[in-house]
Amino acid sequence: MAPEKTSGYRKNFSLIVTFIVLISVLFILSLFLAYNFSKKFIENEFVSEKVKVLEESIKPYNEFFQNKVPEISYYNGYLDSATASKFVDTIINAYPFVSKVVFYDSEIGNSPVRDGLNTGHFSFGPKNIYQFGDLVPLDSVKLFSRDDTKKFSRGDDFNALGIKLISYIESLDTTSVPSQEELFTNFSIIRSNKITYLNIPGFEDLKVYKQMLRQQLSPSPVYQQDMLSFHLDPYKIRIINTRPLLYQNIRIEPLTYDPLNTSTDYVATEITLPGPFSDYKLYFISAKSFVAQEILSYFMPIALVMLLFYGILVLVTVLIYRNLNINHKMFKLQYDFVNNLTHEFKTPVSVIKIAGNNIKSASALTERELKLYGKILDEEADKLNGLMNKLLAFTQIENRAIQLNHDEINIVDFIESTIESHTLKHPDFVVTYEVTGFGTFITDPVLLGSLFDNLAENAYKYSRPEHKRLHIVARMIKGKVVFRFVDQGIGIPTPEINNIFKKFYRIQNQYNQNGSVGLGLAFCKELVNFMKGEITVKSKVNKGTEFKIVLPYNN
Image 1 (tube, rainbow, N blue to C red):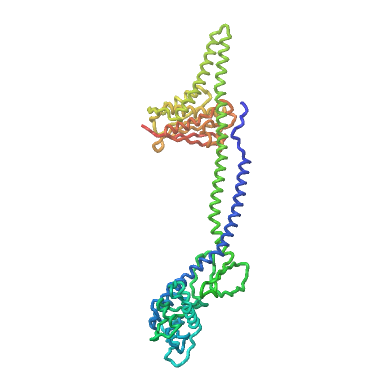
Image 2 (image 1 turned 120 degrees about the vertical axis):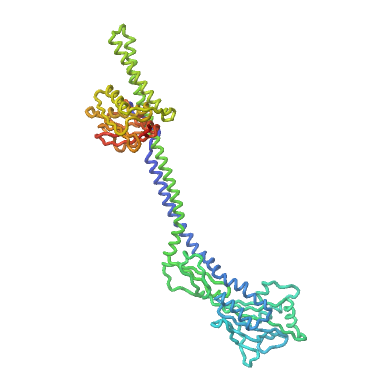
């Protein structure tokens, strides 16, 4: 046989392995970089996300300071102890960080007062002082009354805000209306853990206050002013941990707090509280193992995406390799087919040519020679015709170019006819049969005959001289016709079982060196499919092979 041609689709296994190793190294490197990125990102988040925790935790204070405290001005200085008690009660219930409130029921007048601030003709002093909260939120404690004879220290809050009020009135420009922000700033004082607020009078009242500073008015006016001092407890601020998977523990500590435990097993950060709480800070601390879990949870989706991308690359690589492998096999099958087909045609053509040359060159032929050459030409022409018919029939069936005939056949007569034709052709071929369950059925006799002929030829061809036997069984099983072709041939290796029905495929053995195109069993498979049946095979090497064909029973 001619040497096998080198395939144009030669597999380069080392190139595929190199590519997979390369993308694997890149994948591992990418995972390493992605983990470092995740670690750095979470570490930055640990430092930056504290601002969100502060914003959420301090929201109630901002609402209290910006919305609730200015409500005092709505009363225009006419708060009494009962109304103030109700007002403070709503504040303490809504804002737990307000521990107590001191209420100064005050007056501004044009005459000096005993317990107040007196500047020129301007006086500012309390009539009564009450304390709410600090274990008695619903009741009031009267700390001072002008009617009492005992002296009472007004406190630093009252003095500081009173002085601020007088300074503001002195510098007030009465030709333009001050802004609300300007008024709010000058009528309140924010100190550590305390907010003191004086109700804001109308602009016309402020003008009168300025006149009172300069001269004695007649009649002497008196204006009501309410001052409230809110004492705050920073430890009662409700901490809202917006990142519970990042911050293991958050607590409020003094600004000077310095933890004694400086273990490297923990990470910590801090942020100062605003306004009256500025002497305190939010202190964040987490175990490194706790933060590592958050790093891992952030890293895992990235890793899964990278793994998916890596898997796609590997799959594409495998598919490319598989495609090259299939192309290689197809090239080899096509090459074998052309090579074997050429040999199949070449042998009878050569014989015909030799016989023709002998006839041409002979001056005279005897009757015996004429019969011999005639027989040779006839047999070789039959071989060529049979090969062409097989190729044509295979192509027609594969492309569904023919119609399935439906004729009734007698199964015993059909099998005996097949046996007779093959035993005449091969006198050493022993074929037996048995039929059970039915006598006739409707099928295409030509196609069924092709099936029987191909399987019988295979049984004879792939058997040793002393084992050229075939047993055909035909049975009716569960409404289907089942044929079994059992021979005692050389058998089929298990790895080849899945390949024998492929076009142009030939098992390499001593019986298959010449005279096989690789179409016989593929042709049988196409025939059975065309007849809406199934074909299976069982085989043991050196024991024999059994082909099983199941066809629909029509009668």
